[in-house]
Length: 632
Image (cartoon, rainbow, N blue to C red; front, side):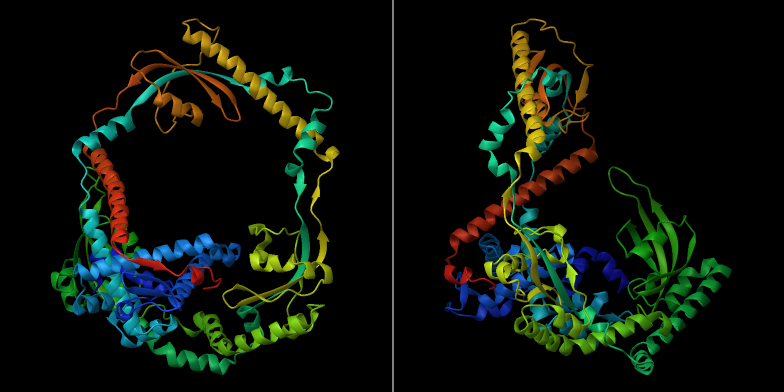
């Protein structure tokens, strides 16, 4: 089994993602539905996308972003008309591809599906597939085996379709050569930069210049409406802090769920240590002992040989240990999710022609349950788990009480704080627009409630809003500042600095353009050029981005070539291109890398065109009224 996972690592990662991340299931049953109903969102080639499917996809999208952004996440940002349309477009695209895969007979057999599922470590105990663990993990995601297996089958079929499209993307050798020649070309330049700072001393502002600008640009100095609030946060963690779990209950849970695994793991480690002692006494018996004792069915009959592999191809602890060994050297005990390994390095292939270094190793695996520890090491986790189990129903009850108190006693958060032993917290100044700096209050729905006229006038509690998984939030305004324009005296120096910058830039551009005109006429222009330097298309060594574009667009048929370029926020640049340095002949590794890069670009273009063809050929109807309904 270890060998199977090793050989299909990328596929296994994709499968594990289905377990770890939430997802919307809209698979095989979708093909059985008939015409659309008023509750459907879209019809794609006769198959429907329901409001329920869309809502689930939206929730999954929110959870993925919430896990990435934490408190900076704002669910309201994903419920805009543009985001809803984009999400639906993705679902339509998936449906079109799934239908095409079925029509193209890109099927995954039951046997292949069983092998994939059985090979996932997430579903294994003691190195073998566990139906009980499989069912447990699916239930935790709100799935059953039929739904999961249908989605898994569908995703693999779509991978086959995408792979077929990618394999069909061909790149001509001449195209690779042209791109390498363009990418590898350098141009030798000298430059003179007339910076705006050189002309700042020549700028004389009129006495009323700042006021004139201020009067004509009031919007630039507008301070937004602001509010300060107090709030309370109810979370599962806060409720858990109120729970107590007795010592006897902790021991009972450990004895029922972990003790046998811990003892089994300890016995497995003892067996691995005994084998290691034997090997250190007789290293030449590695293959024989692997055949007798290793529990990796994919390698034991070969004396534990795993063949050659590159760095990162095998689970991390094994990988790190193997790449630290010298040829012929044997490791100590290496602990992975599969169990305990003893590794012997049997070969090394140095890096060559762009290919990474590879290593050949044999191993002896003694299977062991993962993450089994003694009671004291697991005590805190057990307590947390038991509290979590209790809180499932209690949080729903607490949420109802929390919401009722916020509504029934709108003038204060104190009753809520006292009931749930929560701290009333105060915010900094907030604006109507969501901002990460607002922390837990970075929630557009809450901000809209705080800035509502009734909230500002009466200082009543807002409605209770969702603050994340198992988290509720309520707030009330305590101080308000209307929108206002900053006084002239406060911004006078800022305006003067801005005006001097503008005038200095204009002077630099005017003088620079005059110098450039002289160069075009074949004159010296009185310039002291900087040292010549060869630059690449990526701007190294450093060249202003505006100048870089002009330099590599310039016609270099007749040298030298002179350029004059206005440089944003800097001034005016004058450039002399004195030489074009062609790219050296490309080596095999560079050609391979460029071919792969162009192939990816071509594949993406082909994929986009293929999808456009599918859309054009399919009848797609969208219920716009349903799409506009907030919250799915």
